Figure 1 (tube, rainbow, N blue to C red):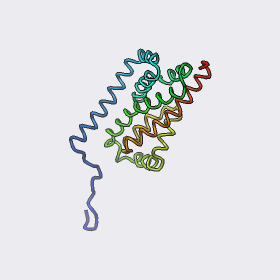
Figure 2: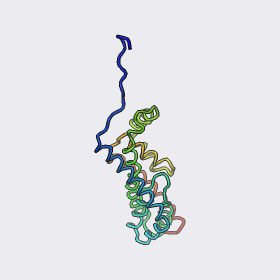
Figure 3: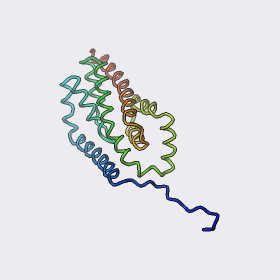
Length: 188
């Protein structure tokens, strides 16, 4: 190194043991929930008989998985014909958004893995620019990318309440429309 050169610095941030432990626990919790839901997938449908609380539980459990969602939308569609579709959509939207917190927690825990990568900085710009609107859009439109959005929101440390609020709003809109469609098909 010549006298005019600055020393090379390591840009990686160091985390404390308690922060590392919290991140590891969040990942293990997310993985554990995913495994439990997949194992119990066949018995989840019975909760539809419990009305709105059943819709809430099915939606929560169906969306608490990472990447491999349980088909809670089918229950919302069918129950929309038997119950008030607006309330079905609201209960399903809230349960679904709470279930999606597993992706958010996984992203929050995995931040150290991606925070110094080039793609992370591009996505960070997008999320910082559109934040809650992006989460709302991903939640409102049926697509397999919502888990990625939740992980990204957690990784970028979007406030949990902002993520949850946008997810509840988007999921509720989607599930109200789905339940209304179910009501029109099943004559509710």
